[in-house]
Image 1 (cartoon, rainbow, N blue to C red):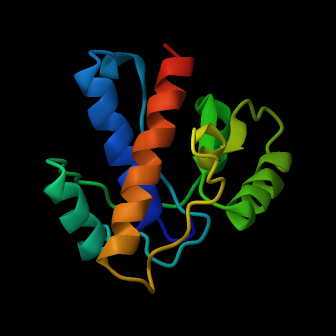
Image 2 (cartoon, one colour):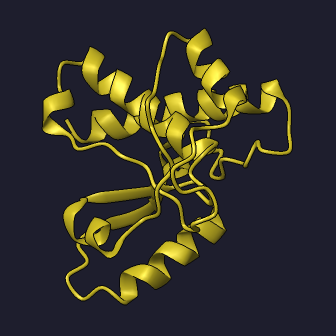
Image 3 (cartoon, rainbow, N blue to C red):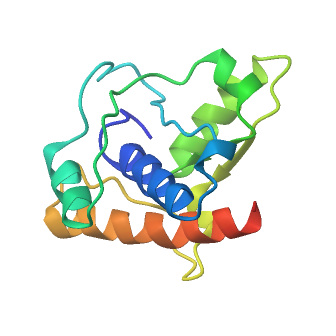
Length: 146
């Protein structure tokens, strides 16, 4: 997501836990990245960490920017909203061996909430909503790819 401190580290941590619980974590390289370099090296938002902790999930993620290599090495780059999607597609176009499928994570939501809204200016419950959306989407994504 934009700065890789709110939504994307939650999605990354949720997916890692799910893949671990399913016994398939070794088959995946799981990471998250930013479309900007605002927060490079920062820990995730404290409210996001607190939300994950409530659900028994820890993360050691540090914000990083999406690189050209990511488009060549990852099979999927899943993003949070339309502006992420257009930024990533623009970047992918400048990488000639890009193989990553760039999709909205929300496209996997059985409840059809396509956009995962940035909770940065919101409250605890907005982080909880992001968490719940990520759980629903990651579950379907994992089922489709196992």
